[in-house]
Length: 508
Image (cartoon, rainbow, N blue to C red; front, side, top):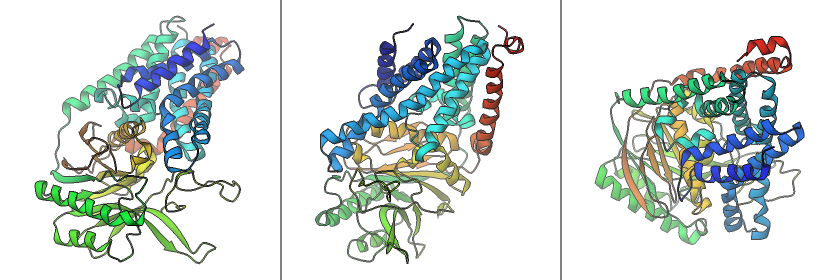
C-alpha cells in the first residue's frame, strides 16, 4: 500500500511549483497532482479509502494554489486573520471532493483492461474539470492545462479540444505509463495522446502567420491602492493619474484604443459630474477610443430602488452614446451573496454593493475591432469567451483588478488561465489590470507583453483581429453530449468489467 501522506505531500508541492506562482514555475511538476490521486485511488483497498486518500491529496494541492484567498478577506474584508485563515482551507477541502471522485474513478478503472482504463481516466479528469467549472457557480481555477501555458508548444491542442480536453490528454499520458505494468497496450494510449499534444503544438507554432491588418492598442495600469480606492478624497487623483498615463502612451504610440482596468473609475461614471468630464474631454480631443471599468446602476420599481452592475464602458468620439458590457459571472461572496435571504452573512470583501449579472447580446464595436469583454475572473470560464466570440468579437479584452490578491500566486495563475481563452477562441487577448499583470496575449497563448506588478504602466502593443473560428469554437456545443456518450460507454464497460466479453474487448 502506498503511503497516502507522502503522496498527498507530493501532490501539494507539485501543484505549488507546477502552477504559476511568484517564485519559480516548472510546469511538469503539476502532473504530480493527477499522478498522486490516480495512484492512491488504484492502490486503495476500499472505495471509501480511495475517496479519502484522493480527497486528502487534492485538498492539500488545492490549498497550495488557493492560499491567496486569505489575502483579500483579511486585508479588505474587515475580517480578523483568525477567522479569515480557515476560508482557503475550507475552500480547498471542498475542491478536494472533486479529486476524491477522481480517486474513485481510478479505483473503478482496475476493472478495465489497461488501454480502455487509460482512456477512461483521461475522460474522467476532463469530466472532473468540467464539473469544477459548472457546479455551484463554477470555480475552474485549477485547470491542469493552465500550468503548461509557460511552454506554448504543449498547449496548442486547446484550440481543438479546449483547456479541459487538453487536461484529459495529459492525464491519459500519465495513466498509460502508470498502467503499463498491467499490460503494455496502455503505452499506446500514452504515445498517441503525447503525439497529439506535441504534433498539434509543432504544426500550429510552425505555420502560424498573421493575415489581417495590425492595430495598435494600449493598456494603462494605474496601481491604485485598493485600501483607499473607494475613498471620495482620492477619486479625482485616480482620474488624473489614468489621464496622465493615457496621454503619455497616446503621444508615444498613437494607439487607436486604450484600455483601463476593471472599476478603474471608482464612482458611477454614467452620472454627469466633475469626475467624468475630464475623461470625456480626453476622448473627444484625442484619436483613441477608451475602455474603462466602473460600477453602474439601473433604477427599478421592485423592492430595491436600483440594481448594480460591474460595467465596462466603451467611449468613442465618433459615437455620441457609450457602449457597455455588464459582467455576467459574478464572484460569490465578493460581488454578491448567494442565498442572501437565507444566509445571515455579509460579503467577504468590501465594495460598492451587491451586483447583479448583466445580459449582453453583442460585442462592443469600434472601427474594425469588435471587443469581447471579460471582466476579472470571467476569463477563467471557457463558455464566456465562447459567447463573446459567438456575438462577433474579433478581439478579447480582459479588464481586472488583481490588487485584491496582493503579491501572491493568484495574479500569475489568472494570467495563464486567460491565455487559454485566447488559444481556445483563436483571438488576441489584451489584459488591463490595476496592479498587474497587464499583458498582450496572441492566439497561440504566447504572452508577448507583460507588465510588472505594483507599478504604474502605460504600454502599447500590436493586435490582429481574427474572424475565423477554431475547431474548439465550432464543436463547443457538442462537447458535453460527446463526453456524456463516452461516459455512458465506459459505465457499460465497468459494469461488464468482470465478464469475459469486457476482458476480450480490451485484451492486452
